Length: 449
Image (tube, rainbow, N blue to C red; front, side):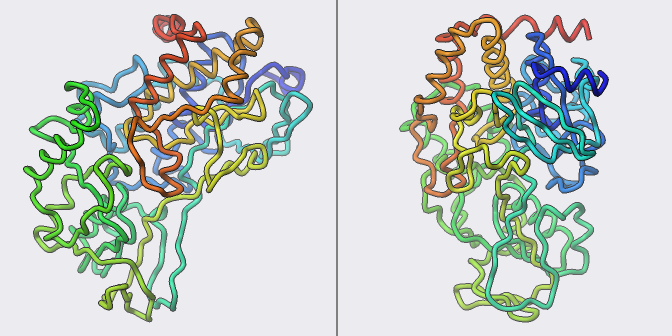
């Protein structure tokens, strides 16, 4: 498409980002014949799974924390040859094969960042890094939530090296060093295991206890077991899994892990089968929160200290949509979006992928993208139905926690339970008459591409 054609085509949709969420959106729009352009600042698709993508939080040892059978795009399963928990290179290959299978690359402009999005009447003015300005009927922001590292500040001065985990790539970086990992999310736990196997000494500083879930239970991937077995009510499911974990792991506090101050499932699941092994063998040690940095030592709140030469903060990320920040309503660092997707103020602005969920996100991206595409399609072909959905966007605030009282933290306030979200989304599609359009047409597009 020529530059002049783009300028004269305000009915096109702009997708920003070509990671898994952006690709899901592209396929959904293509399925309904909605014209769109897609922009990706990197040289290829894949988002964070491409280790060559500047700023990615990915590292060489990273694997999916959801299993192969429960992950993946809708009706595009991962290859049977993949292991239960695919590695980052396999996920990247899979994501790129998805883009190729549905002919999505043709509409993507690579090495082209979006620097600004501005309201232009009822449409949007999108400025690209080269200064080009284009106009679009709608904008789908799909640039993800792991690009702005959060680094806490501690008292004192440190003589060694301080980095965020977003800069970490290889376990070889730990050779000959005394390493302190700060934070025990899934990335922190993975990196702590790398340090345990390679560093001269490895420590993990944590502020609270976590429920540690092994990746396999009775030889079955944990999420596959949870999703494939009988759907127990929460009051029964929680004590059942707690008993199973106790049987498999014993009392983890004897390895230095604090007792969790919350119930099972009330925080982001920490899936790791290696950490306990390294704790049992003394290759990594748990330390409490940092009190101060003191030259070559790190002092902790319990009065202890350790000599370290690398502090690596695995402390998460601040969410941001820098090119369109002012058009979103923010609450404790999270955008207020209906179903974590739809702007309540602008009927043609979407944030896709801005949610925390306790299960695989890929299939969920597909189902959400389908609803976004249906809504945009209705704006042109069924304005009455689009208007009905506008009312839901403005007023509907469903509880999507599945009865789980997630931790009272900024991160967990945006958390949704996968089962509750899928149930509500399915009911929403039925209510809007969109259910029959979800399945049965992806394969046709794939074959024709």
